[in-house]
Length: 380
Image (cartoon, rainbow, N blue to C red; front, side, top):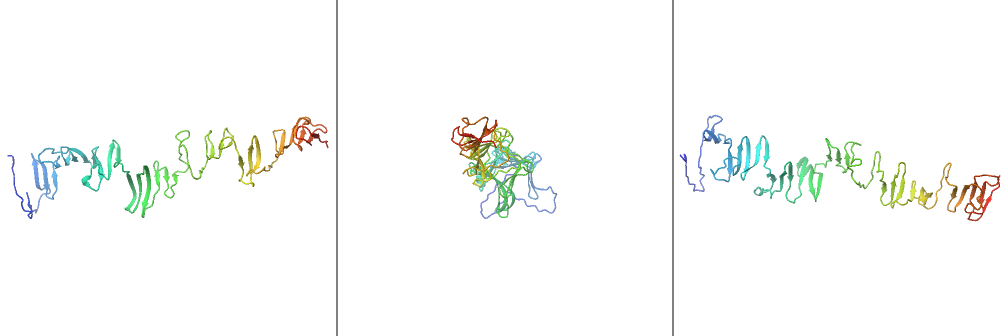
């Protein structure tokens, strides 16, 4: 027979509560598996209502939404929307495709599905979310919403929106930022990164970049994987060496260079790399001495370069035949034989004849500025 029960009723009074089917059971005692309803197919239960109000579906039971009863698609994955259980798993189906699966305590999503949040659930599709997580490709999860910059927050403590400690991973005016922040009773914490328990730390007190193990980590490597320039507004302090490459230099911006052109050699040059001024010792005023290059001559000058400085020492050896005093050119010269007509010097100079001889060892320049005017001094 096509229909065992086929009831027709008319509900026509707004003030009356109607019931299509009503069963009222008075319970004094019953087995724990007693059912208020049990609909079976070939002896197999397909739909049941327990005595406590629980609803039970068969092994492949499915609750359909938005289709006409008896139109097919009785199981999960059919051409429908609904919730059902298949082979020990729970499926949520939309438009005939299983989009969510709960099995073994885990939640699985179809590759084109998403998790999102919005104030209006009626508009909760991918284009109307306020925040959404998506699968971009295998092994890739993204948080995105059109051209809106995103923020991901990890809290250390949270009391309420005015009292917390957290780290923000976010885009801030087209710059990716990792920021530690706090509010109310919270404290801004340091940020640590690296391997194991951490290698580097950005200190929360003053923003200093710290190595967690003293004198252990490097930045860059010798000859490769090196950063290019380091710009500092203060000092660079080293517990060991400050090293430059063999062709490098220590540079004072727009002023001077210090090179080492060969092992054991130091070269001082100006900004144009073609000269050098003063090597000032101790200060820059006339109270301090300096060394100055004047053509191929090394001069002792006052540090303000106002005049010559005194030079004091033990034995002073010159590798030339001339010992010159001041800018007047007066000098002590040496040679062999008489200087007359041979050695040019200003008046007041002395000449030592290395050949010696009676009354021919010491000469004085008594007149003229040429090579004449030399007078031998009598031996004493």
